[in-house]
Image: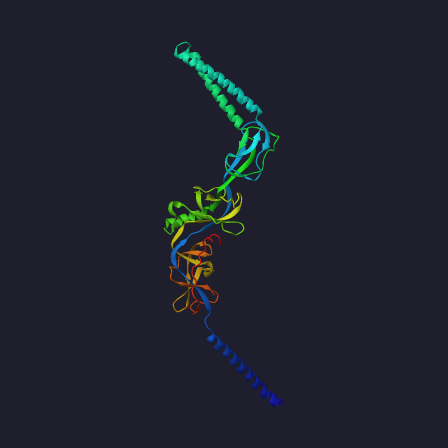
Amino acid sequence: MKNVARYILPVALCGCLCLLAACLGEKQQQQKQAPPPLVTLFAVEAKDHPYPAEYQAQTQGSKAVEVRSRVEAIIEKRMYTEGDYVKAGQLLFQLERDQYEAQAQEAAAKYENAKREWNRIRPLYEKNAVSQKDRDTALANYDSARAALRQARINLDYCQVTSPVSGFTGKEQVTPGNLVRNDSLLTYVNQTDPLYVNFAIAGPDLMRRQQLAAEKRLEYPKDKRYKARIRLLDGTMYDREGAVTFIDTRVDPATGVVKARAEFPNSDDRVMPGQYVRIYMEGDTLKNAVLIPQKCVLMTQQGTLVMVVDKDNKVTPRPVKLNVSIGNDYLVDSGLQGGERIVLEGLVKARPGQPVRVEAPKAPQGQAAPAAGK
């Protein structure tokens, strides 16, 4: 039995080794027969692209007017409903008129007396019947009385506090029955058509645009008149186009931003002052620019790379120099000229020098501002 075991053990070991070798050979054969990885490509193009800009913004009435009293008097009645829309010239507060009516009547009486005296003195002076001094005194009294009457009537009119602009009223600041003095704040009126949208442009962003323009790679709109659109807090796009009417000429030293403002029509008062919105400023154009999706780019210790696929569908890494991100894309400074195919999806499967299976190239996916109404 010992002799038999001595022969069986080597035979079994040899069989196991043969089986293992066969399995390894089969696995290598399967690997050799495995198809190249499947990737999706992006077709690189050099062409003009819009250079959209998106900023956080806040709306404001084009005229935010403080309604103040112009005389000292007691408020008799508020003539509007707080928060309602009022038209320019509409009565808002009625102030007590008695004392100012009396002052106007007194001024009118003095004016009539001075007028009669001037009408009496003037023909006498022409006949040399009165002195120059009498004539000048009568004229001065007449002019003074006329000015006093005008001021008295103005003060009387100020007892009716009207809205200087059309817009939405605010809460009353002083209730009826209280005495208000000259320049006391009574309420606010916000004119919302047109509507202002205030935003800020980061200093480096503005400098980058200026640098691209100096390199002839960016073109400003005609007369630097930018179009604007806004997205509301509920995610919808405001259906009216605005225009950027102001961009400051200096950087705020406290915040490092450049203040700007756009103007939008708002006749239906859909947008209220004080709302936060997203504003899209449009008009700049990148000339003959190369934009690639950000997910095409590999960040390595040696720099940024893309995987270029040649006409034989073989992969070659290529260094690229990037400029600024625009939406989900990068603006390429060097490394790509247009006409190349680069790996978009399946980047981890692509190996330098190895072939790949190619799906249909995808069109450029530059992220401009969403279309209005979408």
